Amino acid sequence: MEEEMKKMRNLLEKLANAHGISGYEGNVRDIIEKEVKPYVDEVRVDKFGNLIAIKKGKSPSVMIAAHMDEIGLMAKYIDDEGFIRFAKVGGWFDQTLVNQRVLLHTKKGTVAGVIGSKPVHVMEQEEKKKAIEAKDMFIDVGALSRDDAMAMGIEPGVPVSMDRKMVALANDNITGKAFDDRAGDVVLITALERIAGMSLKPTVMAVFTVQEEVGLKGAKTSAFGLNPDVAVAIDTCIPGDHPGIKKTDSAVQVGQGPAITVMDAGGRGVITPPKVLEWLRETAKAKGIPYQMDVTEGGTTDATAISLTREGVPSGVISVASRYIHTPVEVLSLKDLASTTDLVVEAIKSVGGYF
Image 1 (cartoon, helix red, strand yellow):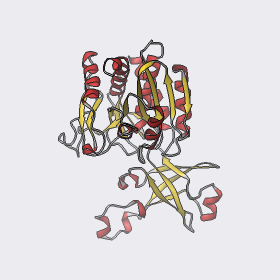
Image 2: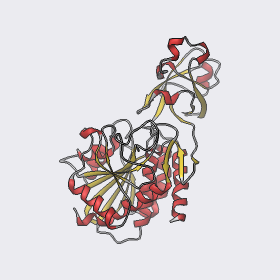
Image 3: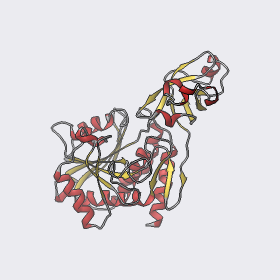
């Protein structure tokens, strides 16, 4: 177990430190493709950019999805002095962007920059009381002019990601960017490795999806093409175990095992069918895997798009509790990563008894 956790940690570091905002997941996809090839019968990239890895079997067919993209920014306008205005890609809370280091991924190479804003020292008293909005921020790459910035390869449309590296915290906790959902990618890759030598009844369709953060797009197109009998999305979820949030907002805690979603987005997202809940919950109980039940009123996952595909696909979600998601300093437990993988593996093995 300790050796596998170390291996998962190293893989998460590689994936979380990689850069791939929505629509520009290529670097992440290349890493994942190399990782999964030895463990499956077929690997392909579909027309939309999803990476599909299949372990052939018979019925039922189970789709396990984890998204590759991270939220980011995009260069929008370069002013005369060479400062870059940007658009948000995905769900940012503006205050998390202030004074962050970023990387601009141009055709000429990667350019480092920082997000700047009006200094507090020259703000009026009323300004200090207000939150700084993204529209009032800009990226400073050290350029002397628009022409100077453009000579670096910077132009409207250049994708921008956070410049953060994963580091260890105490008690097997780690922090970094893009754990949403590179943590899910690690769980799925590790699960494929563990079932590689098994003779299983179901056909396993592992899908590493694109553009989840901007509308669950890759899940929608891949599920339509694969038409699975049942599906599970692996993602991250919000715990209620730190200052600023109440247990009544989230009963989930870091370090207490995978979270099984009953409902998200107040029902506008997925309402997990009772049969799927029974499958996941009873599997966890039977194998002694600690688990938590998650009911939320905000945020959803690829499972929502998958569940609405064709005539409908019974779909659920297994999540890793992660503090401060949609920031560059997300925090999760390596123990949760391992136990989430345990549940995914056992769920794959037991799915034939339920569907």
